Length: 170
Image (cartoon, rainbow, N blue to C red):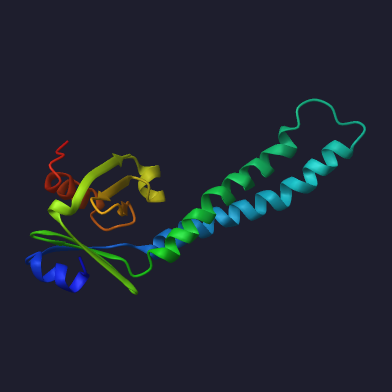
């Protein structure tokens, strides 16, 4: 269903839930900075450790910065991609369905077009800070899917409404 035709048939607007891609980008930037610094410090330390004749025992001092750096890069790169993809994203909840708007893309889905809603919440401070406190995958009957994360305003309330609409109350 096209967004224009879909919005007309979905009824009135109940709420809007913009995605804060700026916050996602800031989390990505911090993770990437940790990654770059960790790798930049870890590689020379590791080379020195293995090149030294007198080095013995665990190489934790050499490997820890490199490991932390690789974790930072592994976490930051997907977040940076996600921040770019969700720039300008808004979920608009209607009486009869959901519309996801992006600057170059709109998708309207009636409630009966939702096949399933898979939700996982992690309600603790670290997860909230990283935007991973809510993850809601909306699988559509036409084979597509939509993703709502903790970067979306009122994501938990939106996910709960989507579960109820799909008949999957928790």
